[in-house]
Image 1 (spheres, rainbow, N blue to C red):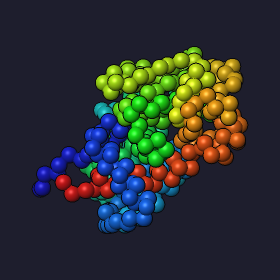
Image 2 (image 1 turned 90 degrees about the vertical axis):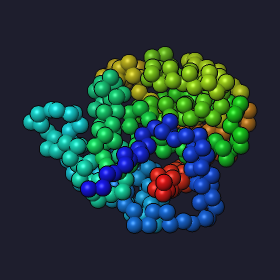
Image 3 (image 1 turned 45 degrees about the horizontal axis):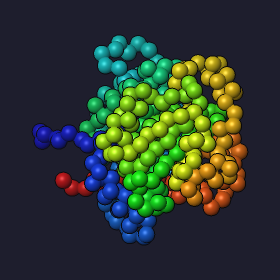
Image 4 (image 1 turned 60 degrees about the vertical axis):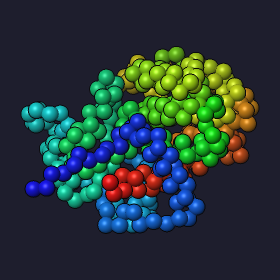
Amino acid sequence: MTQRSAPRHFLRLSDLADREINDILDLGARLRRGVRGADLVNKTVGLLFFRGSLRTRSSFEVALNQLGGHALNLNANTDFWRLEERSGTVMDGEAPEHIRDAAAALSCYADALAIRPALAGNSWERDRKDTELKAWAEHSRVPVINMESALWHPLQALADLMTLRDALGKLEGRRLAITWTRSPSPGSPAVVHSILLAALRAGMNVSLAHPKGFDLEPSVMDEAHTQAESEGASLEVGHEMDAAARGAHVVYARSWWPLESYGNPTLTASRLARETGWCVDERTMALGEDARLMHPMPVRRNLEASDEVLDGPRSLLIDQAANRLHTQKGLLSLLFRPS
């Protein structure tokens, strides 16, 4: 039997070298201008969604189609069943199949697997380990792509980097404000973790604002401070949106759960109700240096950001969504490039 080389996975942005990120962004820009390729002819990528998706699912399917490939689109709620990720467990619970077996079988059909794992939602200590995603990567015989886990959303980070580069040109020394926004249904901090490290890696100066008690994952913040120091960039953390937005070239808005009360909906709702005023409006944007607004969407209008900003010339939201297609095409081309 021919010995297979270990597959190359894309679980977070740090899985790519700087040169590879630039290659993806450059290729994505060329594809956006109308250059067409057939990099994925006869290639199939299995898309497995254990949570809902709009932009990721749509952009991935279109990217595969435009590159000549095929999407095998599966949804855990309708197309298959719960899978067990723990090793060595006696499977007498709800899950009738182990990820070990599902990954091995799907590796026979698909040339790569893209996974949006479920979140248990009752323990940040558990979810932060990304055990389900890591189990897929461990047992798959083909590349695994992370379509948003509890900790990371590297596909969004690639699109955000392209959007930032389009808007600002050179990123080194530019100022990015990342601010928490209020939402009754906040998401995981995965998007913020990813753009935070991506921006610092690009040499941007970052100011992060969120209410007290809404701190990001400590291990990610440790990594962010180390990244800032190595790049000669600055990272400021505070609790006022206006202070973060002052002097910023881009304001990145996003809501996320208070990790201290993760898994406790009553306490989380109480904390969210106390935090008012975290809405990005024209007054906020005016504090920046001709600032532009970014948000990964979905966005709650007039709660996270005002209609005036979202529909005005400062908004880059649709550019971000469009760039998901182009950067994912660039990523797929890289992953399937002959060695």
